[in-house]
Length: 290
Image (cartoon, rainbow, N blue to C red; front, top):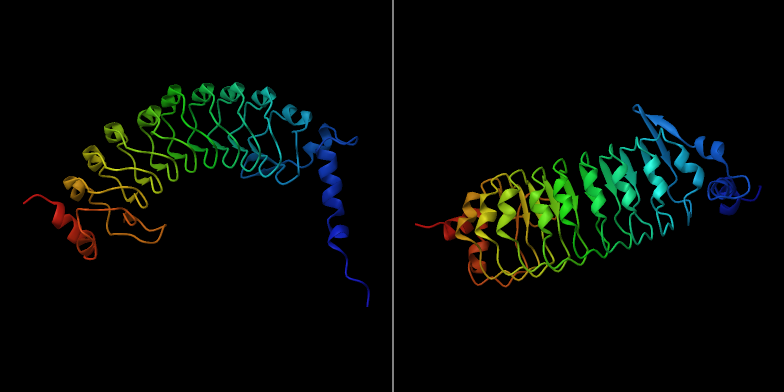
């Protein structure tokens, strides 16, 4: 019986391709272009998991690209040349070592989805506000302490993930993102939620677990579209009496994916735990004024 092929042998072709794309002597424009595909009418190129420390220069000549995946590489910088990809709709940069995003990213006027989570970002360029078609933005698992006020211009943004960063306050620009449906701010250093939260009238999911929030503003209770509110693992001692207005929170939830109110692991003085054992209806009955 012949010997079983080794993993090294099986992956030899992958390594050769990676070497070419990473900029070896054989690397050229045509060798990169052949990896592009068309799917559902979009021109797509994935260079994910190629060990790239630098994106090949030829990449920025592929101006027809609409979806580009550079995730899970070793990129420490994104060049200004990215602005040449003016047709990009989706840019995936997650799982790299990016310390910053270039201001020129604001020239990607057709961008609708930007994934830049699990990098080393400490700030976001103000120029990103020019990407007014942006609908989904994930900057989770970085080192961000705030956002530029200009990002309030992202009125089409519906999903924003800023979890696992270093923010002590919710950036003011977020309250201007009136199209937000999903806002994820878990595992930051938040101490409060401003009254302006009431401006996010379309919000259905708000996740602020794992922070240092001591009280919820009454204005939060005007967000009657909320279907999931996660305030687990905070420092809440009481709840607004107006909580009963959040009628789309249908139950006290326990599983992370469940809709409803998540409120465990808070030092609640009111209501007492016995009330919570009765579920959401008992909680609302307790809070609701006579």
